[in-house]
Amino acid sequence: MTERKTLQLRDPSESDTAPAIRKKGRGWEISEKRLDAIHDRARAMRREPTPAHQALAERFAKADLGRYTFKRHAVIGSAIVDFGCHNLGMAIAIDEEGQDDQIARRRDKSLEAVGIRVMRIRASDILEDMDAVLHRITAGMRMRIADKQEARRRHNASRPRRNAPDEQTHRSTDAQDR
Image 1 (cartoon, one colour):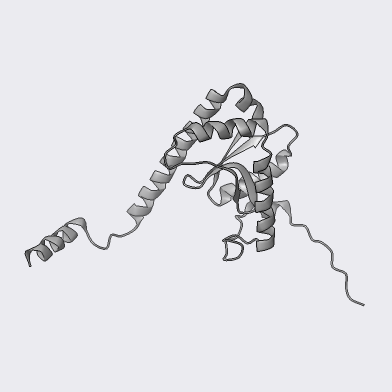
Image 2 (cartoon, helix red, strand yellow; image 1 turned 30 degrees about the vertical axis):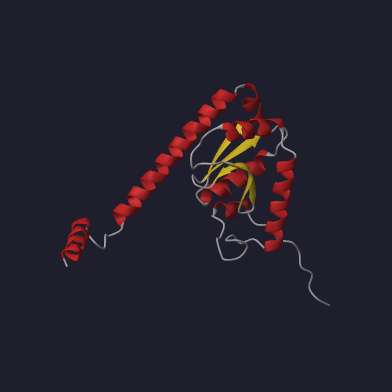
């Protein structure tokens, strides 16, 4: 007789680590079948938005955010966020009434582990005072842009330059003289 296998649950303290990014499942360690199911669920959520989600989506559609666009019900890894901006590495999650906070916190923690900043906004705030919510989102975007620029500066400062700017200038003038 074979030995019975039982489902082993992970210890909650193990979930503090970042999810492994590999070549499986469009970059994440997720099967294609599971990822397709997540995309189908996000598509269904886009078809039936909540009032708060619809109101914020309409404001984003009217706003001129330049190259920073928010995609509705974006799939990031195995999570579906209400709005996601790929260029900023930012997600907006709308807290609806009756939503499980523990699952939301776990999802936010895993997203932040891979560099996605999550901003949580209550649905009642969106419906009652849209201008204050938009001001908060804009402030979060500015902060995220500043964070990205600082990270880029640190990265460029840590890399040794292969060709100094004056060497490149001399080379181009020498080539023109010939």
